Length: 284
Image (tube, rainbow, N blue to C red):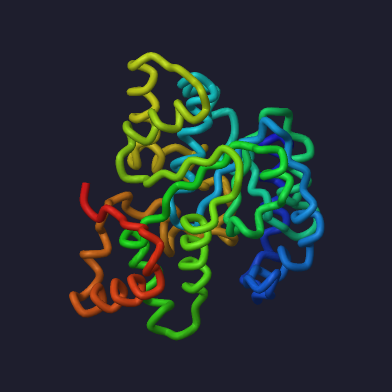
């Protein structure tokens, strides 16, 4: 694994080449140009039997789940969990940065087993070796009501990839890949952390579970430089425009949506998800 200081230094030196990229279709699914151009190494990525894959749609509890899994695996040792920023401890499989910045595939080649891997790829694009090796996979169940703030705007503009979000959900719930798989919401921390522990076959005493619940609370993570992405240069991720961790409040969309906007989003989503049997909690 690359040393945290080296990785951050390379990011800082390469920041001028980061920008928004056009999308290109890969097996019918739009991906950012660098990912599409380097699709071969991603598609042929060789998973190991003891890999753990955290698969999420963006803005769906990814970092929260990464911290939970890491803390479980280090037995709740906060100091060990702060050994490096999240994106170094748990590499992003499909990230393809400009030269000098190692790609996700390159980073993972140097990570000792057992590896924890992050991906935003829809399940049908996840490298087949994960399913062939029966690697454990978990998907934090994306909660559309928590993401309304992001999706209504792009839906109303008519320039969007919301369909991929809906297809992402439908694929998981109608064509679940073979292998150990757990699907979780991200709204009930203590309950879901216990489920992840069971899935990973890890037993921890109640006081350690409580420590993990506390350490992965929104406020603690927002202030934790190893989890809040503050190590990423501001020219790449400008958190003065919008903090990476915004509010952590379930149902915050109600503070931004009119009744008409909320009803329009719900109607659109319900039409697209009809027949999946998929339902979400919007209150805790």
